[in-house]
Length: 117
Image (cartoon, rainbow, N blue to C red; front, side, top):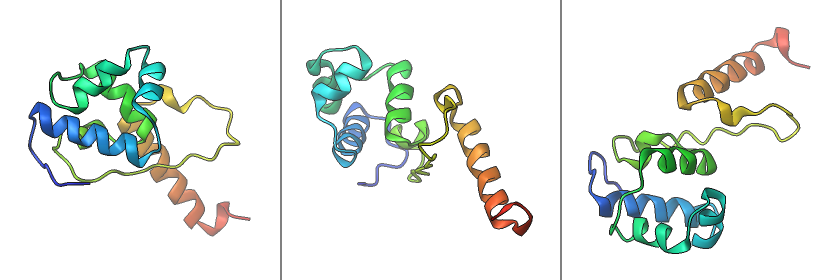
C-alpha cells in the first residue's frame, strides 16, 4: 500500500479503496453488488470524485478485513485478521475493536499449552 498516513483527501481515500479492492481480487462491479450500489459509485470513490459515507467505508473494511482508520489514512497497519471458515458464528456483527479482541484472545489460547492439542 502506498503511504498516505494522515491524508484524508478524496484522492487518498479512493487510492486506498482501489488498492484494497484489487489486492483482494474484486472488480468494481462485485463490490458494488455487495454494497447494493452501482459500479459508477465505486469508480467515483476510487477516482476521488466522491467520498463514500462512513456506512459504506465500514462495510468495505469488513469485506477487505482492514480497520477503518487504515482506509482514512490515520494508520498504515492492516491487521488482516483471519477467522477459520469452520466457525458458524457471525463475526461481521463485531466492530474493529471486537475483532481485535477476539484475535488477541485466539492468540492467547493457541500460545498457551493448556489450550492446545
